[in-house]
Image (cartoon, rainbow, N blue to C red; front, side):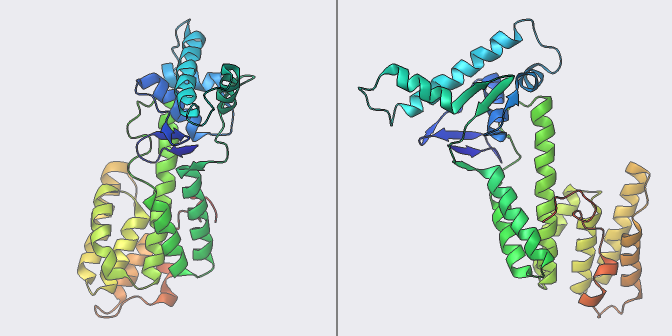
Length: 289
């Protein structure tokens, strides 16, 4: 089974799509696909579909959606099942793919691919490479991980409470990988190459301190000291106005380091630790490598 959720939902069995078009069966499949090979409780599926206000027929309706998914899976499996084979064999195989278990359902991937699992694998390898000082390897691995994203997670799925929470979690993981890939590129001296990307990112994530710190560093190392300081003041104004917060101590130290440096003198690599914003992985936001 091939499972893709980092963008539009696409679940394929034997090369054929088993993704329904109806919104609620699509929600059910999205949650099962994200947690492939794990039991998803009936209660979680009901909460996803009806947001704490399920109808009396919720369980029966959920079973109907599961049957619809099994019909799609059956059609996909028919491609590799001998025409003369007994129908009972096909039914058993369908139920081996979308399994009913005590308290819930499980989508069995059969050892297939999952873009979420591949993203997490590559990102973890990238984090470990970064920790080991292999900045080239870290940049490459994290780029590969980020390339798996074709849009927001579950982009074409009507999301309820469960999928909304999972989408936020996945987006935070993506943002962490992006942050660490930029960190690796800065360590490789690619500051000028990063300017356009960081211009867009800091406009999109207007209170993200680490991205702003990286932008300040890239600007300063490109000989644009005044613009680097402008970024700090813009971020501070946004934080104070929107959140009632001052920039972190480490970001303030970065500003002071830029102020004290000669305009033509970039901050050197040995001064990097005191002048970067807190790493998302150090603060526990990102998973460890």
